[in-house]
Length: 316
Length: 316
Image (cartoon, rainbow over all chains, first blue to last red; front, side, top):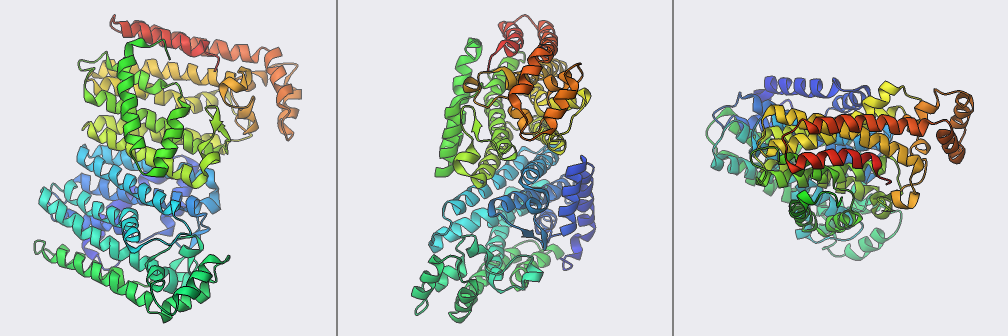
């Protein structure tokens, strides 16, 4: 995320907290943590924490960096556990932790990351911060559980939106809220930033669901059509299933095993469903950008606005 | 734990929090939570929270009940995740969650329980409480990871003690500390109760490791010799491995697959290793009881002392 030079030095400090907290552990955890940190990732959540903190009176508070490191650890924990759930083999372009180290280590490494994150959060001495972070895990689990219950079932658009809100948008909104809280921002500012992050998260997840079909699998680090192969119905598919003359053929393909992913992909392009999903994502990103424009005129306001556009323009 | 009529009405309130928090969730979580709550369990950790709280100035504080419910949820979460790690089929006498609902649900249900626990802890508005609870999860994961790394390897006595301290004793000590903290006890009192719980936990785990060989599998809800079948070396085995003339034969059996559990069990009895482990547990329980006697003269002091004896006398 080279765009965000504004938070570069703070992000280096956050990375320092991450590396120190995770690699100074026992040997196995250090190995897993090192493996995860090497894989990189976009550091989107700590970026949101840091940018949002600039809208509070104390952006340099130690709590801000603790929270930024904690949200990334929570994110890493959920990735490791999701890989068990999805029986994933690849994540961020390398073998998934469960594939490399086995399910037992993946369960424990995720729990360890959660514990470490809550230790950092407790250090902030801010109950509202701990509560918000616990809410993140709670809401995400609820979304994952709902998704898990509905595998290989066609869900409605509303159900899809609720699910991505729980799985992704809530976390991004809460990351913004946490950054503002840690910097001592007032409740109105916290709420505005949370709303920005929520729309950003909706856009982000819909784009993810489009990239599942359109991205170069090498760059994305995941196979094409991985979602539906795992039984997860996403927006492009829901749109295509509403369209004639593709509907009947699509339903038939979706009920066969294995699902003919390449044929489905072609229909998602041809029917315009993928383009329609991208339009949906752009509307959410526009709402995020417009919320950003309501913030005080700081360089970070510009960065949040750019981030909204970046999220829909990325190719992996 | 009918012994502890002192905390009966408070425990009913704690059970109320547990049931309300866990079963008013989404359908799947409610089903899993209900399944876990039905299985019962000893409620040892909330009992320690409640008894310890009586040594602080505010034993009736709402924080005490929140913490009591939270430690039981953390315990349930670790049981559910441990079952994945151990590939357990039975827990508390019924099918393990992973066996009944699958690994995915078990991962998510555990994470959900952790999240709910930290939500309750955040409600106490006490950073020291959140930090102590995060430490519990951190230390337990460290112990589990260490154990996982050394499966089917003979460990030394010191390594065994460190491991059970991390896996069990720390949690029991921290439960006492949390009860005292939530009731506003001073640091010295908190430390004394923590030390009591730590010794109680050492006794508890060694007895568990003895019961793994001696208990009626029906009452225990687990197969005989389950630990070594899973590759975990416990104190009775370590003692027997120090004794002649059993050492050589035992080593040979332990390197064969499947391990002849019944033959190993006979040697553990014959060599006196199980009795020796019980003596070790009694020494730890005596230390706990003696620490309890140093507390103010309340009925709860008596209960803590009795608990120390109960832990070593139980048969499942």
